[in-house]
Image (cartoon, rainbow, N blue to C red; front, side, top):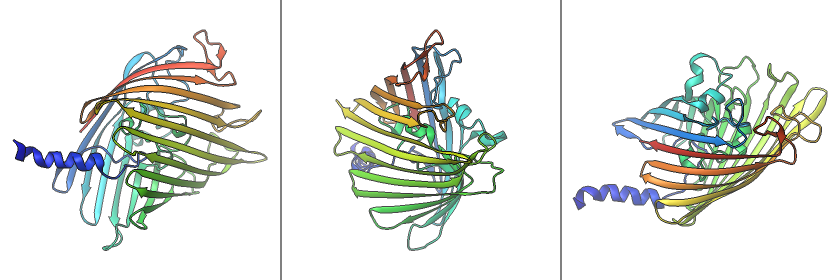
Length: 365
């Protein structure tokens, strides 16, 4: 028995004490491999209760786990991959309330694509890859995969950046510590676009040690759409930090700012800052906490969300229990506060506060 388990134990040790992962990526689910093929799966279920009891049944301003007082599926998918020395392919169809909310502007079967890309290696000596298709964006330290994050719910930050991009990306390792990626995409979170203007983005990842990661991103593109015909160039940049000094503690923080130019109107600005930390009481049980602030627009201005003067704080605590090596059970409480009446009370009256309690079971293979 000891000889049989030794390879598995070695794999766990390497994974536990290896290089820190970039939680912005959507590439961390385990896979069952058969030759060049790999198959994985993911299921994120939840029950949320909003104490303001929204009449629509949807928690305001969120696209992930946003249903009130019902058990539902945030995101479920199958992950099919093929990888050879100089070629790779990935197809990830997805389902759930996250897909319903986040892909509302896509048409037909495009609504169900989490990722779908193919790529080939440009250099035989270096791991320079070019990929084309639909892939997760690098913006902010939180993707759609809750299992990788210190808290179950997403921060304000990823709600105002693309969750996915469609186009071409080129990944170039600069050294053992530096990796750069360049993007040419159809636009700001859009797969099918009638706009002929493309957007460009960059990603620069720096790992000073195996315990720390810094990531800097940029985006530049014309954001004129049928919903916002007065919008023109959009400029965005973010910086996030991920830190895991030992097996007892880890932390992450993200700051960003964006600017949206408009025709015959002032430029809009949105920005955010957050800090999240987690402490492990045992290998299976941990507690996470978050504090954040988000500002979108300005006094008397329309914001990119269409809501004047969107300013809000958020604090929360999350209990995490690792039920298995590939399953998490979580319970999170989160409170929102705004100096403005952004939220609606149980009686549909404007209020400055909102409280959310949410439980989840997430599993993957």
